[in-house]
Amino acid sequence: MTKGFNCATPLTNSIATAFKADGYDFVVRYIDPNQSSWKRLSNAESAIISAAGLQIISVFERMGSRANINGFRGASDGLVALQAAQDLGQPEGSTIYFAVDYDAQPSDMDSIEAYIRAAAIATPQYSTGIYGSYAVIEEMKKRGACSHFWQTYAWSGNLQSSSIQIYQYNNDITVHGIGVDLNESYGNEGWWNTLGIQPMSAVDANKIIEFLKAGYDFVNDTDSHAEFKRVANELRRVSGQAQQ
Image 1 (cartoon, rainbow, N blue to C red):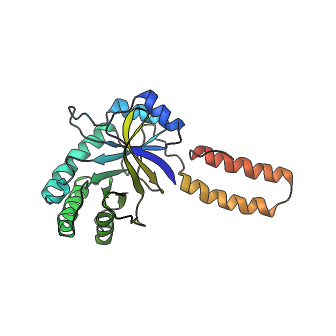
Image 2: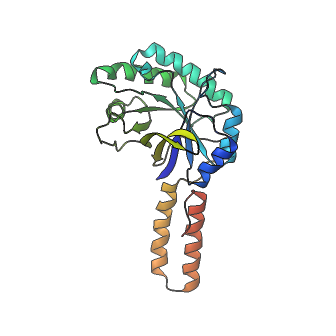
């Protein structure tokens, strides 16, 4: 599991560094080519975030219920998101999440599917993700509408999908002087940075550490134990975890 947050406030160097020092590994930020959008991720901010050691997850949102309009809007928003991602230098193959930020009902699912499929067609260079409630995630997963899923606890009735890469578990709190929502992730998030470096996730590191533990238990000499411990701690370090 990896610790992260999303926010509308652009991060400064001091704020990004403070979050990293607290053990956060990623931030979800809004992408939009519109220079007047106060919450947009800029090139300067993406460089600050990356230099602080945080990963970036891109989300596109114009209004919470926009996905419940039609496929035409999905195509239009997809083209705007594509321009924003390319302007930022977001690497191809990473993910753009499109937000369904309201309590979507069963009658909305056909429109949401049309929206997300059209957005995916408009952004072929990127993987396509969706943000929404448990019901939205489960239905879009079942329909094969996209490949990445970010669930919010809101409107989810204490249910958590087993298909998600990211889970938003707390909203509207203040950390380091800015309003944030708290998230955790489980691998294959589709994140990126401006340094071109994709660190090992905590999930993958801990899987390898489990194999190392088996080796540690098998041998009896002190030197081998020390080496297994050293390698395990190096894996923890590169995946942003505390050493033991």
